[in-house]
Length: 255
Image (cartoon, rainbow, N blue to C red; front, top):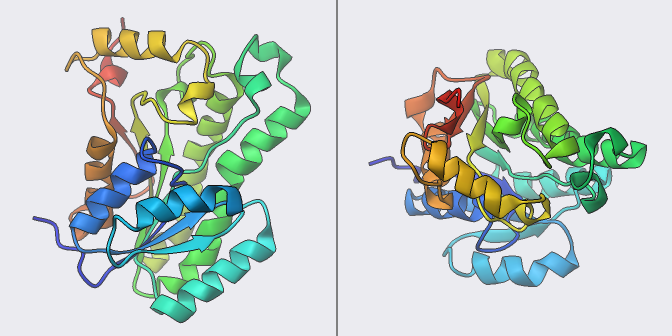
């Protein structure tokens, strides 16, 4: 049994009960971690607060990760409330719907910029802000997908962003290793999240995944949460810079 009592985890990207971040939050909370749940804006506040209420002891914070001053203000508030943090979960990704449909060659310049900024640069930004609050080390994790390395039709510019995200994980791991801060990515199989619904043919993608994966099924949020719990614990103390697949084995298959 993993015990995270006395540990504080900051989670970005909790939108609703379909979010992978919700599965992670449930697992970390059950293990005794104190949770700081961060939502983007007033529009998302209501939904987030309803979920936070289901996690006794958790607190909510508003922060738009595209605004540096909001990141600074958030981490100042986290320092004041908790003193230090132990785990940071980055479950943030976005690309304009128009750039997730149609042909990849027609990706817009602005759509490319947006996908890279929101889905990749924000990991750098929050990790930089979190590092001073991890004086004894800690665990940073983000969420990737197999399209980072193999073509998944319709994933388009988000696939390029995930490839950039995985490279970013390696560079952050190298930078922060001397501070005993570990940085890893979880590459989850397709899940019907709010964000995933923006990808064309998601239903067909999930059917194909279940048919071909060795376990012949799809993964769920709590299974991803279990891997996040492992990464947040001392059991993963020698693991950093890795992409850990939680996809029922789909990634090992040639066809």
